[in-house]
Image (cartoon, rainbow, N blue to C red; front, side, top):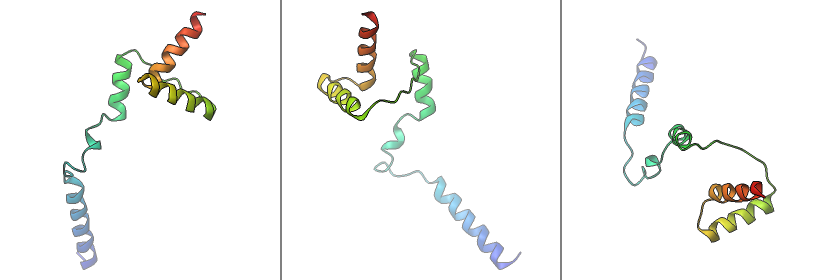
Length: 88
C-alpha cells in the first residue's frame, strides 16, 4: 500500500470518528425536534393534509399578525377562517 493510500485511509477513519461523535447538549437543542418524516406521520394520524397555496405578502403579514394577537398558530387561524367562509 502506498503512503498516500495509507494517509487517505487515516483521514477517512478520522472523518468517520468525527461524524459518529454525539454533539454536546448545548449544540443538540435543535436535534430533539421532531424530524420531517415523523411530523408528517403525526399530521396524517391527526387527519391533517398538506395544502400549499400562494398568497400575496400583505395578506400573509395580516394573517401572521392576527394569529399572534389571537395566540394561535397560522394553521389554526386559517382552518377557522376557511371553515367560517365555507359555512356562509
